[in-house]
Length: 70
Image (tube, rainbow, N blue to C red; front, side):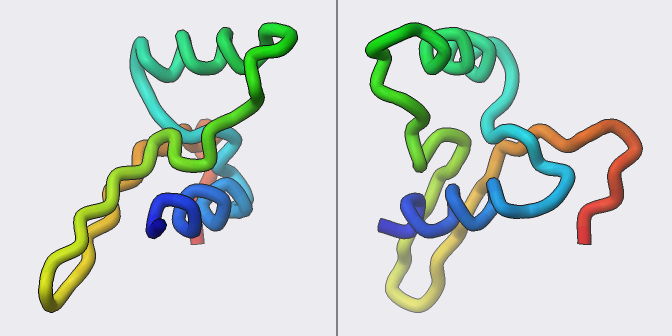
């Protein structure tokens, strides 16, 4: 559930053109461009762990070169 919220919210940040990283990101990006592939996953590049007291969200993001995120 948390990944469905954190993923789209992160994509709305100016200077973050993509989520994920490394080889898996490249493969995923190619697959998303293929006709009939089903589009982007909203949880791509997002890992959420829910504990009893707190929640941790890990994001893999691609940031534009020399872009300051605020």
